Length: 490
Image 1 (cartoon, helix red, strand yellow):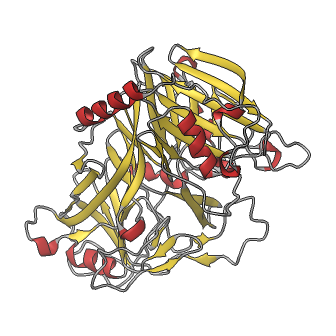
Image 2: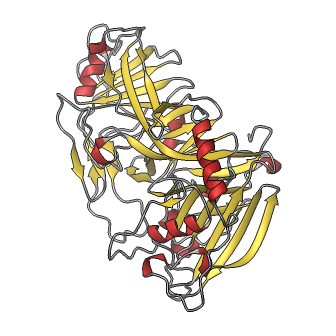
Image 3: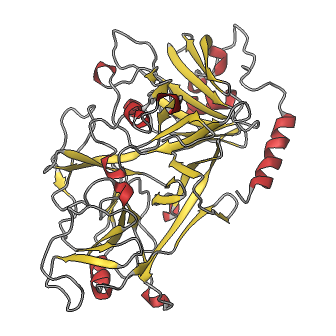
């Protein structure tokens, strides 16, 4: 990446100033009482066992009992300098099917290849997702990964809108066997093919998600001008937008969504779900594009525009994206915009930009790059970035990824067991997780999805204890994994 020199200089400076070797525990006397918000740290853990899958990938299991314990913690260190290892992400069979009954971390990793020697050696669950949209007709769930997702250099999910409405997502960039934690913004546009008229360019609101529903949204979209305003549900972090254009790629993995979808919790912890509600009921407009982004078909809920290629009235949704092509869905003003510009044989261009906001550098997307969306930033430049709010006690299973000054990637899971008769590990707060990552001497660390999603797979076997009923794995949106390098994984 273009800012490698800056990053290398920073790593060298921190490395030469560090007095402790990587993963050494800070000294704590037997009589020292630690603050209640930082009781989970490396000094209070004991090594249970260490296991090496191949040179360069090592797992250490820790346990602990003092203060608030017990705990079960797994730390995996991936060192690309010791062996050729791949470090990538995957969303399984499809972005829109990431929450099917079989799309657990284990099943996603197992499905990468049928050749055992090429299967991933370690993997964890990925980032947060909105999995509360159900297709009643097929009894399936539709997922939306919350933040930037890039697979093999292809942008498949846009940045979420954080504080101030800025489209910036904490992101885990995976490239050439190494990880890098940063913040990424996305700028997505759509315009008639070949047009140089700036007034003909419009915002593309999202990729591979249900129209009208932007999850993990802290602020309305400041780019939405001249259209009906968004509304925000602060309890769920979802913005509902009546005017959008959404693009679907082959990686969506299932048919485009219809208005029959309902919003209802896909969470076994919700004993009594609230009343389900439908998503946007606007049938809108749908356009099918080929691999050259030319219009091949369209479906209009209104009387078709003469010459548009829409020969009959038809509702949006229920169509499969072809290889190399895409499908557009518009609702509200977005549908009107598409309707006015869609003609058979014409097409659209999709200018897009991904920017690393730490260095204000535009990323050059190529086939070696994978990006998974993260949550709260825990450690930055060797300093703790996250502390628990005053009075907050939020012990849960946790998953985190960090990077150290030697270029190694550190995967961490902290178990949290709900069963009061079998308390193996009580979980951690985000602040405690940040402290633990800092104790592991990482430069940067990010919190991934936790709770029932926290999963660690080691040599194709589940080695942590998920919290869903009977310790079963929860279906998740995506994964981060490492495996044999030097040849394709599939």
